[in-house]
Each structure stands twice: as C-alpha cells, then as structure tokens.
Image (cartoon, rainbow, N blue to C red; front, side):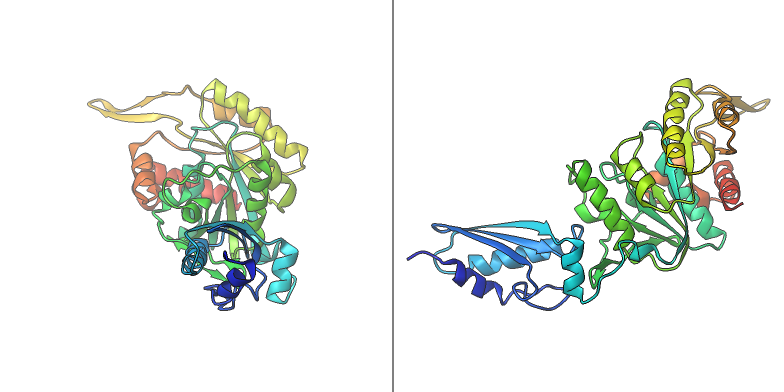
Length: 347
C-alpha cells in the first residue's frame, strides 16, 4: 500500500511555524496534499508572501515528509494567505495600512527613465534626513531591480512578528526590500498583480513604527508599480530625478504627468550627474558631460522647484557599491548637495 494523504497530514502536525510556534496543520497553513505513488506534493500557505522564514518552513516540511516510509520524492509549493485569512489567524483584523500609521510623511522618488541615479538619490536623501535628526525609512518598490540593500550595505534578512515584518536598519534609516528577502542573485520574476500586492504588503504589514519620512524608491517609468503607489499610498509628494540631457527630460514629462493626473504634488526636481568638476593647474574646470540647464528648464516649464544639482562624482558610485553613502563624507561636494536637497524637501 502506498502513502495516504491522512498519513502525510499526521506527520505534518509535528511541523511548527518557527515564528508562531504552532503546528502548520492547526494554523491552517497546509492547503493541499497530493500523492502519486512514492511522490508527495504539499502546498503551504505562508502568513505573508515575503515571509523571511519561508525557506526554513519549506525545508522542515520536506524533511518531515521525506522521513516517511514509502516516500522518495517531495515537492513543497509555497503560496500566501489572504489578508482576511491572516487577520483571522492572528485574532484581529489589522488595517491594510497598519504598518504606516506612525509615518508622518511619505514621499515617492521617481524617474521617467532608468540610469539617472534615482536609487542613489533616494538612499543619500534618506541618510541626509537621518543625519539632520529625523527618523527616516526607505521602501524599495523597485521589485525587479532592488538595489537599496547594496547601497546601504545591508545583507541580513528581516525577521517577522505576528504576521508583520520588522525592517532592517542602518545609518539611522529603516529599510525593506525584495533584495533582502529573495537572496543574492535570485531573479524576481513577478508580473504586475504580484508586484502591486507586494508593494501593499510592504506598506501595511511592515513595522515601520514612528517615522518622520518614508521614501518610496519607485522603478523607472510609468508602469504598474508607480501607478499602484500613486493610487494606494497617501503620498505627501514626489521627488523627480533626472539628468541634464534631452532624452531624460522628455521622460520626466511623462512621469510628472502620471502623478499630476492622480493629484499628487511634485515637490521638485533633482538634477543628478549635473556636471563634472576637474581640478586643473589654473583651477577647477566644469565639464557638462550630459548637457546643461535641463533640470532648470524642466522645473520652470512645469512650475516646480529645482531641489538641487548633484555633481558627477566617482565618490557617489563608490559609496553606492560599498554600502557607504557619499552623504556621510562631510567634505564632499556631492554630500553637501544632498544635504541641501534634504533641507529643500523638509521645507
């Protein structure tokens, strides 16, 4: 006789959720058991899609079932509970925006195109706010290119507590990103609906606590993620990042159009990689690698503020690669630019 579903279920009663310390069966997390000869497939519903302990749960389930006589192959499929199911499990119904109830200001950082240094600006702006004494955080909403952990030098994985994720923290900045959940080099192949769901999870089910500023690092363009944020989050405003060249400016128009269509204020434009300063025998020389005046023209055209110009400085790149934001180098011209931009945002 082969293995029966009831036998597999009995074995799984001994497997506990590492956070809630209760049987996966009693918690209703075992959704489906399929048996085909000596092969078993188990579907487990996690309390949340980004559960940091999902690998342990998968391994524990596989190990328990593989230990059964007559089983030679086990496949564990992970899915996630709905908000309603999670609320019933935890004994209360938290608000969809429970995680951000202590956040005073939520600001999106956006760009019309990639490659303009939007994430560099987000990270340095958040650290600049922390350096000024404000409690700041970053929600990395760029699901397919989650680079915020690298730029902050964060490699740990977040822990959970009663269905909520606890954000990681460095330089006084709290942060959550798919980059710390998926692991190094793991591709995040998500379609639009799953991206939208993840963004809402990061807002409502992360313990952001009391923050003065939560910066949302958006993916470039005007697709699903920026639209979800615009429609779902009580944004105080948006900071648009661009470079001086014309092609970047054209994309800024589309980005500004997206947020204005949702009646979200544009706080201003940051012109990144604005100029390159080279020290020469006769003094410093300014080279306009990507053109000049683009940010000023766009700010004037849309009647918004030019928050500042950040120079093209190797220290910005080095700081991002090593997890040491350039804004911490007080004597750097780029650092001073970011501190001034932070002051403009505060105003």
